[in-house]
Length: 443
Image (tube, rainbow, N blue to C red):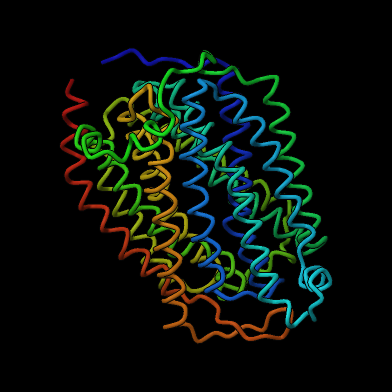
């Protein structure tokens, strides 16, 4: 057994800082931008699907271009820090978007300004995604691959996997309450400032993982490197890992863009009237702490005993949790069942993310981030929300009057059942990946 490599304190600090803050920004973008478009602007589930799909294409393009460029110039830090600073400004720009403002600029009445405002939201979401993908998906993820090895990646992924959960909890409570109390514009400004400050702090704390000596390679050849048939054939385990990731994230995207809308309008959770008493806060802290500790421990166990052992049970845990949510009645049962599918989702994310890093060629970490994004973001965010939108239009019997008095359909519980059906498809590439894992872990 190989001795486990240790990360330095500065590296751990920056993993936490950029990893967590990036997930907070993505959690708001993936959830509250959707509720903003749905509740405040007056968009439909179809508009949400279009926004998610458009931003996913931009995310892939940004990650592919900027990840390859970071390989070419042999630098990561400038892309991480400058990207986070710019990312924050694009988030703050959403504070200016409203039907009234867009109507005033274009000379349209509020009712007639709906289509134009939806378009502006989608365009701005794409711009924000470009900055976020440059800094987080391309540079930060490549930096993580640079500084870790196969003796500590699952543990590192365990740490990273806690951030989406922690961010989702914080965003659900804090952003929901603040949006109800002070409005979306104030929340967008506050979040944008935090993301920008994160980038500024990184200027003083991040140590570049590369030398900065420009590589004498062809940028365009590097850009398409991961799409060559010979490369795909030569890195079978990597592409099997990405196929598993693609199906996992497609299942998640069936319900995730509509999750907060569902919780608000089907489960009945009013974020503006949450009563956070000291006992509730203590329980919440203990639960989050348990999730963090559990993820790190599971990551360590995967490093020690191998990822293959945990893979199939994680798939069934995810699918069972999603099916249970479909039948859950009331907020408490929904929360209990959600914990089950979140556990399965988290475990799958840890082991598949670690596998992708393990099988990524060390000198092409930046270029392969774009390939990774096609599998983990673009395809899932085009197919998943479209399935969710179709299910909503087919099965929803719950109309909702938005702020403009217009009737739109609220996503039904069937979105979780559809996600469960998609999730079990992971078993197809996973069977072949297990053979590759066992070969690697036997060495």
